[in-house]
Length: 456
Image 1 (cartoon, rainbow, N blue to C red):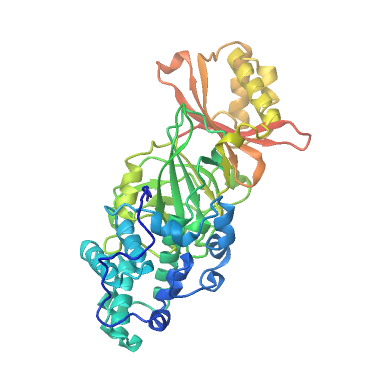
Image 2: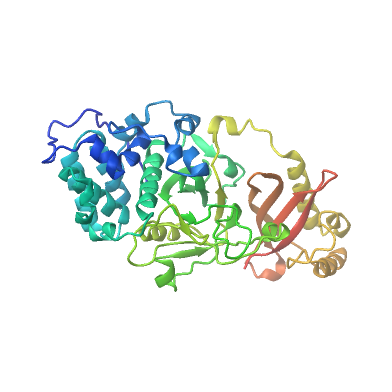
């Protein structure tokens, strides 16, 4: 969702007319709508958000988190001044809440009715419509009069939808700091056109465009993650992994299960395997037919977007080269401060020495950069490595070019680096091979490779 500059005043519109039957704050609170509105300090109620969400999600919705983002203005003012994209369902939903914040109940009802007509499968919109109709009636006990999809929802489903609303609203008022960069992507080279960061505490996916002028936030979208949160360890644990991954080849053939588009992630990657993590089929994908979106914690471990958002994302990013960094809470660094941060000179020195040794086919020097006894990797598995080094000693494996595309850290683990690079050899017929290395710092302080191989 992109917020556009807007000069909208925080004062109620002169054209606004209240709905027939005043919407009383007490009724709203009884319906649970005030709990949603409380996230941005609406006039209806003051809500302690730690009682409506769990763990990192609750923290992400607090005033402390908003202040940490670098914006000291009142969150209500931020919401009212923002102009969401009304071409998107989320934009229409946010506009409904904006009207409510101004006391424009009739306009809010009109907007959400438009949204439900456009997207009848948007459960949160249906819930808001039901809440507004009940609020107008003044009888919370009339829940059965609301839309059928809401009245028949499973126990607990409505609270999941309200958590979704809180997170969508928070994403609008808690925008990334102006002129700031995501910390996990500070080392991204201009050759990587796009990068993705998922902030699981905010149920938000950020898509960045990259180039010679650096990173720029292109779009961001609401997402759903694992039912049991993050920190995946094993098959079937219903958790979303945390770490640095890359998207694979687009898979759209299973639309009935994965919606409009699907991008597999390379989980478990080589570092996950070192840590003993298992599992499979962790994807970015859309929603199955009949559902516009899910609650924030409702998947078996995948990251799920609405079909509209997922198709737009899949049409934008390149397979195999686009990194996806999944974190519990995203840290931002001011662009002006990023260049002042200390660089990892020990790693950069090690990588440069490896690069020079490979270009020179210096087998003796190259051997010190690979951990002994490796079992995986087309180039780093011990038997293959020894065979290649023997050929290099005879200058039989020349390289014309080595281009490093990206170097990314593992979140919260400063001793691991992931390098993606292109290797062009005379035998490649002018088509470079795409490869990836996993490095880690050894106990004696030097860096070594524990995987080096082709990307499928």
